[in-house]
Amino acid sequence: MSERGKLYLIPTPLTDENVNEITDYNKSVVSALSHFIVEDEKTARRFIKRIKPEKDQSSLKIYLLNEHQYANSISETFNLLKAGTDIGLLSDAGCPGIADPGSDYITIAHTIGIRVIPLSGPSSIFLSLMASGFNGQQFTFNGYLPRDSKARQQKISELEKQVMKSGITQIFMETPYRNQSILNDILSTCKNSTRLSIACNITSKNEFISTKEIGAWKKSTPDLNKKPCIFILGK
Amino acid sequence: MSERGKLYLIPTPLTDENVNEITDYNKSVVSALSHFIVEDEKTARRFIKRIKPEKDQSSLKIYLLNEHQYANSISETFNLLKAGTDIGLLSDAGCPGIADPGSDYITIAHTIGIRVIPLSGPSSIFLSLMASGFNGQQFTFNGYLPRDSKARQQKISELEKQVMKSGITQIFMETPYRNQSILNDILSTCKNSTRLSIACNITSKNEFISTKEIGAWKKSTPDLNKKPCIFILGK
Image (cartoon, rainbow over all chains, first blue to last red; front, side, top):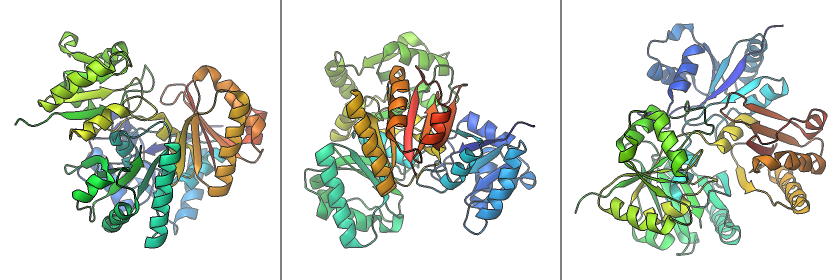
């Protein structure tokens, strides 16, 4: 029986203009692969082109992770993996499987004994946690908070209580066009002495990361509209 | 007034033999800096030498994050930052401030308005979460569990209940020489149908990452003794 293929989990840049966070090792893995499972074909091809312009795009086999194509992608790509072909899994930005699709696919890989190899790269969650200065020994990533403003304020209040009680850092995010309203909710819900870190446009030229007490944020509230942000409450 | 210095947070490799996960951008930052805040001087000098062999080691100014030197390091380095000198913060392995010292120092930087710039790099927590196939939309890193076996089993049981109830992935670790006993505690405490991911020796040649049900782990229990591991319970 031939050796099975490996599934490489390949991080992609957080912003269009920046491939600085991609290692030469990751570039060499991308260079060696012809088969990719991706979230969006156009974004994936652009990424591969940016880091390996000499690669022949017409030779690439691209399989989609989206709901319409998922079943086909699964059966075709797992047959390839079983037969010995290595495959790369890319999400649109950041690390596959973290606040991003891909984990269901990785789960199946484990159940049929495919080796899964995660590659290092940028994660807005981890970069913002590092830079926050908050407790990095215990933290929770909560993903997106409820959309309804009342339910969201209640959730923010719960997270604040958890920080105070347990010291566990609480990380969350929002779709960029709702950032200003979630910031307003945080400022109106939390105590003035609670500390909030805002990490905005991470790894781009306009990166802005700052940790201050809510009282200080109220005095000087940044414009976060349509800018990708991570919010962290911490001690 | 001169422009203030910037504080770069610089990830280091997870294993001695591997500098693959360090980007050219990070190497260029290290190359441009002369001042470093570090966990251990010897490890830091070895890292700088491995990625920039041509750098003159005698020109480097190294300040220690450890408890004996911390007060001196703080006053000297913040004076330098205020006067316009850029400084790099390194921990021994992985990302500064995440399951590692450094966050107190970063906190002070924020309070005096120093710009904090986190660089992308390897994190055993994130690599193992990516590769686990578990829910990456909501997760908690719990750090180290209690040392006492009874308290630890109770904690493992709590984490298992949280996974079942909320679907929030639960990540934890142990010092390498106690890995085998924590694995025994997990196998004896959790239900056979609960899923456990073990990520061991991440980014090294002997990397081993696998996600299986507890029942399957009981049938084939790996030797984790003295190997750095991350444990994850998930759905």
